[in-house]
Image (cartoon, rainbow, N blue to C red; front, side, top):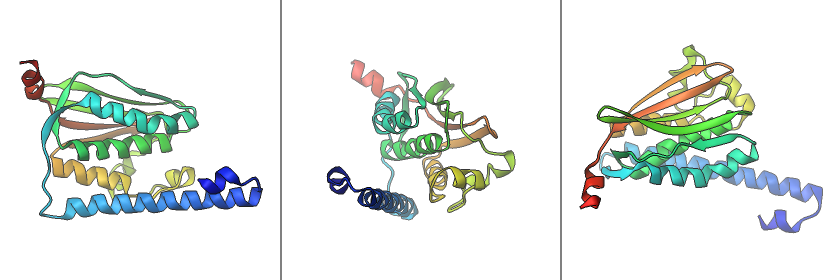
Length: 204
């Protein structure tokens, strides 16, 4: 960052940008490997509790709004009063990966994050107007280090984001599904238990 701020030479700026991108890639790799190793550790315990989804949505908005604005995308998070029963840290990582992918593979249009009540469950939705996924590839995207040709051409990546989503959802017992139309967009859904226990306690 200091190199980019102080340099005026094109070659130095190019070098600084390359270094910055390399460091971001290393950070992404380390974060992904750490997340996988924690999930693979049998001694690791989940911290399940009831918490408001709006708190999670606020964090996601702060983190990803600048990235969406840089690509001139319409990034929307629909406000909610619903509470969910899950591990807050892992639920955040799960949503981070889905939103990051949605922005990464959408060149124009919008990315929408929201949720709806489904009986005793809450269904979280991450939808985009990006490149989409063919029905034949819907199982492939959740495999480690697997990247589709269209996605690889559009943006750099490791092929770990959705495999982590799959691992986290299985560890939490949350269902994850995908619906997509190539060239028109993708919608990921996460189903988690709904709870009002914490809300009622705070109201007393």
